[in-house]
Length: 273
Image (cartoon, rainbow, N blue to C red; front, top):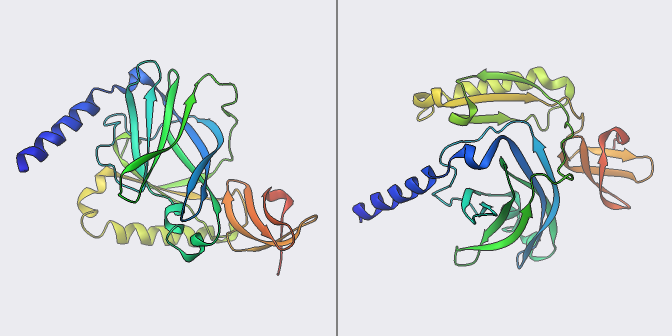
């Protein structure tokens, strides 16, 4: 059995080594946004948008994930050759929600994102989920042309950032990004102090303290919106509601009379109830 495992890992590593980053990708990111909808019995994927981002922060080697960890995975194929050129396993809040009693009663939609290096030519993106036997089954498939004029290139909201550890090239390190959700604009000093405490605690214990040189840690101060999840807000037309999710400067709000809406934060005011 030990010999079999060694041979299998060698074959997987050898397969990944055959994918040269520069043959298929540019040094930037293609982001695929979608909505994961469904309930405990069924689920589906609804396309959202494609967005080009200026940097690729992931690995440039071992582009094929050999482990298949997570409830879901996605694969990117070169359309011309049919060759698998990128894959990754992941888990989602949707999968966690499926374990709740609510998932047996109603359907919901969750905003999700997968990213991969920006392709030089047309690719096929495939999204998979696990079935009841824990096998991956195809959920969604889409052809993507990197020259598609509808791929958004506009600049998203900017964020100020502070680096607590900087050990070099992100493509060769583990990046940890801490997002201050729940902190308001006037609590950024508290947020930074909390991050410092977390960094000291994390890298003061094994196995992290022995591998600190393999990490980059960045904290982002969110000066994009003053709102937080769970906060009561009001809108001139829709009345009172509560923030249930934040996407950049867009708030998803459940209004008492009009249900769920997505609204840019500048049209929203804080409320007492």
